[in-house]
Amino acid sequence: MAHEIDDAERAARAAHLKERIYLTFAALAVVITLSSHGHATAGQSATTLIVTVLGTLLAVFTADLVSHLVVHGRLFTRAELRHAVGSSFGALSTVVLPFIFLGVAALDVWSTEAALRASAIALLASLIVIGWVAVRRIPLTWFQRLIALGAEAALGLAVIGLQVLAHG
Image 1 (cartoon, rainbow, N blue to C red):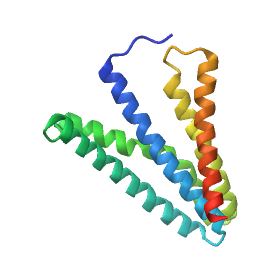
Image 2 (spheres, rainbow, N blue to C red; image 1 turned 135 degrees about the horizontal axis):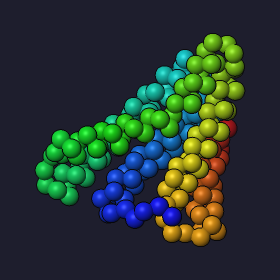
Image 3 (cartoon, one colour; image 1 turned 120 degrees about the horizontal axis):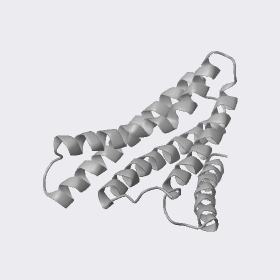
Image 4 (cartoon, rainbow, N blue to C red; image 1 turned 90 degrees about the horizontal axis):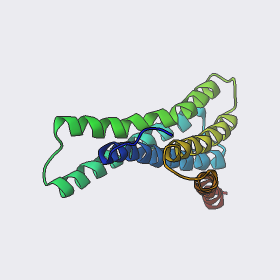
């Protein structure tokens, strides 16, 4: 088992994971919506996804700023600002594969539909990996970890189901 971490480190890790989960769910919803319409090009899909990603990141950063103001009664220090920016914008790593897939589709190697389908699978897998990172260092039995990861995967599938239902 890994060494014990203090509350500050635990909170920092939770913030990094939280932003990645938000961004992944937002990207998953957009990818599913785009794939259900069937008319978007790779370029249009990438543009829609980047606008959503940047909007989500700015919203998360704004929420961090406002909540910090409420809790601490002051703006970020330089170190806190670095942490908030790194935490929010570090989440971009979770959406790299969809942009690569859409780039491949733009080169006519794949269809846009195949790129969007692969993106949805990659984002769902990303949610499971994020969940694993979240539970791997806390004292849970293998069964409790399985339940936590299964619940996260089920929520990802629920997002897919709701988007298909809404746009199908």
